[in-house]
Image 1: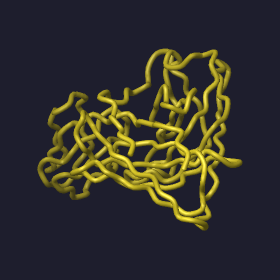
Image 2: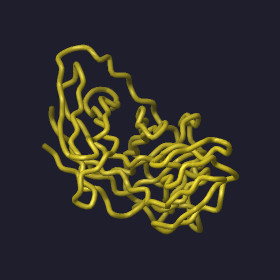
Image 3: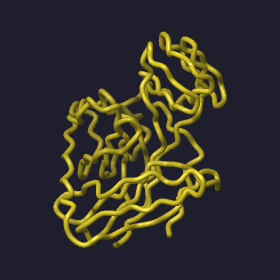
Image 4: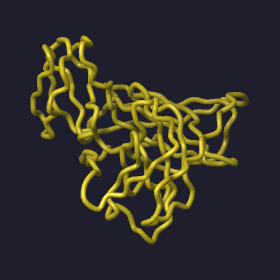
Length: 244
């Protein structure tokens, strides 16, 4: 059984002076992508959130190093597919970056599974858990689930694959802020422009005009008749590879 200890730091907003801004071919009808810059499979070195462009500070990476980029598509808070780039090396003249689409899992063959536990600050937590199949011609999303909020336990199940897998845990990014929508206590909202925080509804109401979002944990913000509390959006954690 594998235990994940989630990072205690939120994802930083990478916009600003000295940032790299690349156009990409990722399908943008989704809410967003989480992109991991990976030099070793044991853990990503850096993580960014992507919508219209891939933006990150040049100082975030070793500009002479070669990276594998893994882009996890997140729709309605759930990981739903993976794209990748092999051997990415920073080029100051680069304008566009092309991601390869993942293969599809056929879902046939012998059943297999992988179990573990998710901990955040040493406490069980509900998080999205994804298994990425690494062997074969292309990597692809093998299975996904959500860990139990009371125990942190999860089990990933699939058919027809034996080989190396990478396990990645994602925080819940919630749903976009849409004026006029009713939201209840416990729902999670994210802003139209990434801030490094998400906002949990603490008082039921109908969302109004998008507010100025605070970027301090525990800060209260009101939109229409709904009241929300700022919560850091935690970095994904990857572990592996494991052979199954």
